[in-house]
Image 1 (cartoon, rainbow, N blue to C red):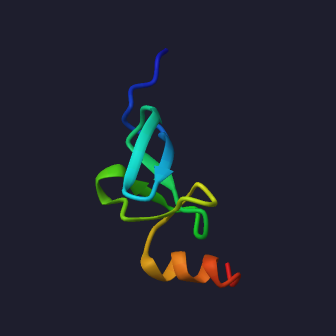
Image 2: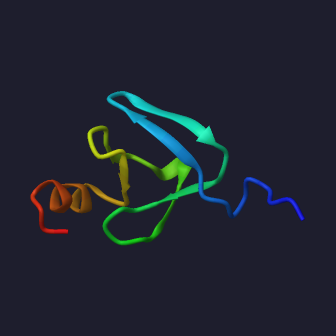
Length: 67
């Protein structure tokens, strides 16, 4: 059975001004909490680490080494 892009994790390449979809899906996973982030709600990521974050707080915690 083929999976639809719904309920599948997307693979993204994160850039300084946006991201590029490498493999289709409807969400990514927060690198700090493990929670699913719908692509239309994704606002925070690290270009250097190529990671997504659920919130600015999680992004800051990761940058400060507290995650």
